[in-house]
Length: 284
Image (cartoon, rainbow, N blue to C red; front, side, top):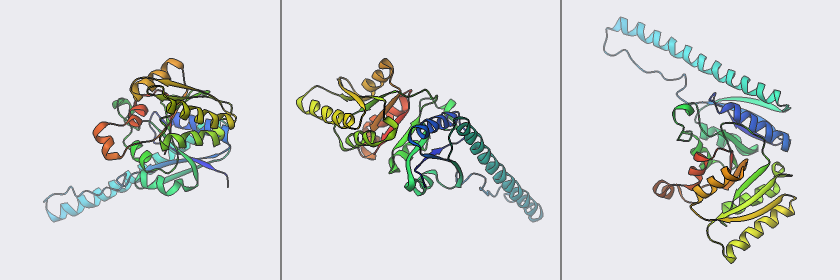
């Protein structure tokens, strides 16, 4: 059985981009694509008692009618989920992806991804969900939960796909950024691409050595790479560099601090994913 990526589609405006990025990953890696749509526990299954204190006969009739409406709603939600998967599959078919499977699941999306990711190389998700047009300054409600819980790299698709040739790798010398370098060096996705390894801070002997070690690992894997040190705060400096230098993807370690600390002081990871107009690959 070949390796696979899990691509989460929800019918939002980001779903097309998720499929197109999944097709890019599949074309470069030879991995199959598993399209997944997850129906939340409440989708089509809520059974609220709206009958109040009306007379017994009328109450029984109303409860029967409500039960039928619940069943119809559950059926419609399931049909919609299948239609979303069929549309997503059509995009991958048109892109020439050979191995595609679809999976419609019920339950919490984080629990579902956790159960299914064991045999996957990565999880691919859109930056925002179905409320994307109404919450452009915010991330999808499930994205951070998935990134924090997933044991695999998470590929966060931007709103629109464009060919990826130049990659910015954010490097701070921490364990997750070192794993990001190792991941790039060992992944078929980055063969033949140009990578720039960037540290935000002040030049020093330690910073230079860390960057050169990272570059050497990439070069040994056949990846063209150079290094750079930029000043400023990580989120603004990296965001400006992505825009000004025309990078097509940002790769970085995910969440270097604890969740509690991130809630207090903010998270570079969250801010970069929120503000970046290119896809972001997050490596734990």
